[in-house]
Length: 311
Image (cartoon, rainbow, N blue to C red; front, side, top):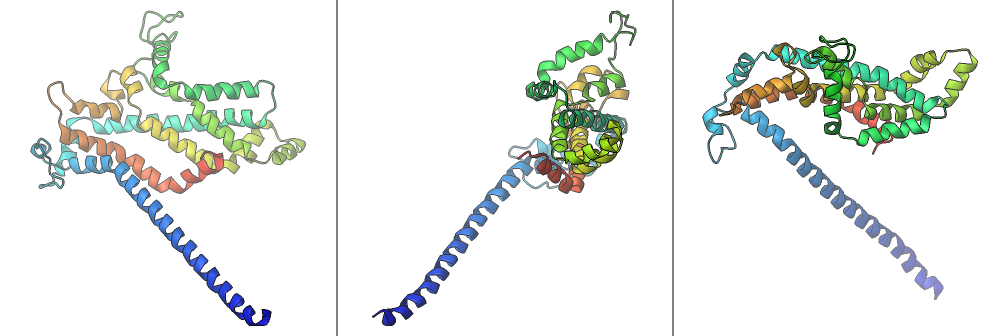
């Protein structure tokens, strides 16, 4: 009896296994297709405003006023860009934004990395409290601190005609000091650097100390080169924040020589009307540098966030 049924059992098992594997592969393909469809739909939704902006930047002004607006422009007006560049001193605005963004990136990399290294690798009693304070500062929105910071800038002693008590003049208003110094160190960048440094091996630090390397030398020549993706991530985030900064430059600058590109774009909006074709052209010009930077450094940017442990 056993001998007669053995072939049927052994023959059925591989068939059942193949069917089960085929079902698993089919379900996996279906799941992957659904995920891909969701990602494509989400990407289209997120990219739609940028596509609309780029298309509107080459529309005729009369076409922008039509209701409903045609999806595809009938006439391509590339001269919208030259008109926008001629209407406002965009070269000056772009230069100022570049200086502000570069300064923000450089200062955050230098100061935030030093703070992050100290919180991650130096042993001192207040390290947990300081780190907790940094995390708490991340939760405070910028709009809650903008007025106190503005008053500090306005009453900076011995600047802009102010006395030692910070009165009588304008302080740092309408100066590069007001544009750059308040954004020199970000609590979020300190937090990021601390996460990067925590993942580095402490054995290298102990060995370097035994060899007589100074703490500054350990920080600059041994540990910091290990977190190059983190340096690039923080630099890119800080550059983006400086380039897209609008409210703070609007508050602390009054002259065209210090206006940044985001504030300059607002010149196309008048009290009675708005030049939408010029506004879209200027906005597209302002967005292109950040898009190009992200496309170039995307791999390092994602790698940096993955290395910091942020999901």
